[in-house]
Length: 175
Length: 419
Image (tube, rainbow over all chains, first blue to last red):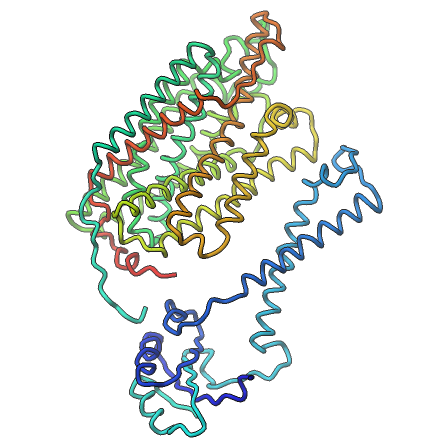
């Protein structure tokens, strides 16, 4: 089931403290508060929303290991297998004996793959790749306003939801 | 945080230094003394090197605690307000370490440092060494002793000053004393940068007198700092497990855990930088340092690298690992052991070589005189002695003041610290 099939309404807030406090208030009143979109990180927001921990760190590890393996394989092929090099005046021609010389490149490759992999994964997951039409709920949501996404059913009384959300401190309501 | 619930400070009382803990520390110190005396009866150089490496670690733990404290002031760090008292208590070991260091070098300096041999930089003398003579402007006894005294005077002065202002703040103006400490900390950090560098050359690098590495001060610092953080983690986890310092939450542990993790990686980075450049360029006067270690101390030398890098890297990488009290406590012990071995490899090969030089000059058979030195009961006993001394000093000072500085201007932020 994709997000498009669910129906959301949005409360727009202009204060981070108010929006964090509103999560608990609205949930106790039976509303399904699913997410808060904020222009800056708010301490304790994830905890208050009860969001699961991000899995991006697992991705980072896998990308990093990929980078590490690729770099070592590349240097093994280039400097040991295909064209054996005399590294640092020590013509051992053995991979493990020349390993210190390969570490800097391996490190850089690990970082490169982990960092780019993480950014690309994040862009894909958030559907904000270049060229994708962004889903802008409120023109000031990336500036100084906070958007709270509330999931509603087809037959929910939106007027009642609006009054609850506004009572919790929202400056605007969007359905 | 949204909810401004009030968090009460519960650590208003000092730590209670129980009879049992006094006994444990006392017994450890006695074991240390016995080990030193027993070893001295059989091998002088080995005893002095053993004492030097152990006292250097002991000093490093205390010195980097004061450094850590100074950084907290200068950077206006909020989260660490609840752990400042244990850090202050750790720093109080500096004058003791200084006293021991002066005794070691006064009595055993000639066994440890080749450049201290009489006549070594006098042209025409029997044991004249042109390379050491070239370093005479820096490595001469007068300047050396001026520096050694200056180090300990500076470090002790600032450690005591931070402590004094912190204790005074309990009675009155928290912000005023905090500001005083902040400006003192800025001065200390400048002096620390200079004294830490030259200190590492004086105490450790000059053992291998011919050799030098421009990265050595950094490398020594990274090792000392990790050991110090490990000691801090151990102190805090111990206090918490005994029911003290309940203000320290998993969020604070996470931050200290990050320090332990990050500086283990930093140490590895410097270890590898120093090794790789020397290994690659393969210049005879440089590689001798590593060849000595590779040929005769391979297990220790590589072992310390793996314990200090792989263990923290793999175990402390995840977020959850850094938030677990007992896991952090065990990791601090592992890191301590790893850096003990690292200090061993920094000191012992060089000083044993110095002993070999002396024996060769005295006409003894060189190969016979070169004893390598290894880790035995005497080394472990000495270390236990120093740990006991450190435990005694830290617990003594923890028992002198409330465990949380209640008027610290950033205490509220620290109590609500959440990451």
